[in-house]
Length: 386
Image 1 (tube, rainbow, N blue to C red):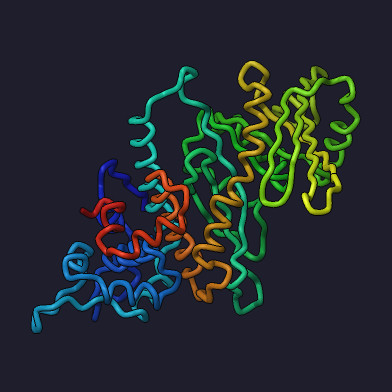
Image 2: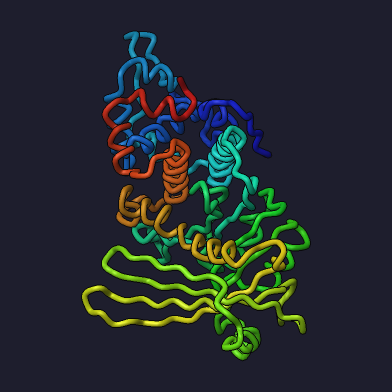
């Protein structure tokens, strides 16, 4: 069933589209209500099913009413869903549908935010999207495999635009195109690590999605890697230079860019890049140098060296702006949710919470979550429920 995204709809209204997998007999709690409860609780910092159940049990009557918690006609009071009910539902709810609704709702708000934001003298910048995977280390299945998710992440906003699971019998490569199939990528630039430097991916992005790519090249593409390594980099001037200092280390990065007129051994690639990183631990004082090669379908007139350097650097923001937050702030790698669709659905709720906070302009997410946790009405406003 296709997802219909209403531009100004509340999250609760959007969640009514999720099909209910339960037998109609004996249903006490509306599915959309339970999912909205879970979303609000996770936004307020809940890490587990138990924490979600405790949050809604402690919530004021007006919050329970807004979330459409079932009201017992006999005693005239709300009866919030128990932890077991929340857990069982998140185990069986269609993960693809829930992900599509949550990311669609977030994307609609991102578009509203972008339309209201003032543009710079250069106009709006090209959207950059990182594709990267993450293993949920605590969610080990019966066959001892780990739940693995692949996400498309917007560099600028910090929002997850799409997410899919990676079956234990395959790998991220086969899930790359299904992940991006439903996204409007017209004019976007996709960044990915060396695993996704695949010819089929490049053709898919450029010819079918009208997008561009920046891909890291390592020895999984031996011919291409050899070609890039043999280019006359010593004759190429440094096009971009950056320096960072923090977290106990100093880093220097340089970028060289070269248009290869004879053609690169990769579909639609028109420029090659050499990225040299020099890293020094401030305590040890020794420099370590790493050289990496990359390719792009963007010609020189569509991307300056500064743009390319920023996009390459921005790709790794998915690690510290998404994966790190899910692990440290939400304790994802310690989560014991491992049955059915529960691991992915909980990850989708965490993505939603992080995205909502990003749209508010929060920079310290842990602090923002503590603020929300002190008043149960605060998460509702961010979810369009008040």
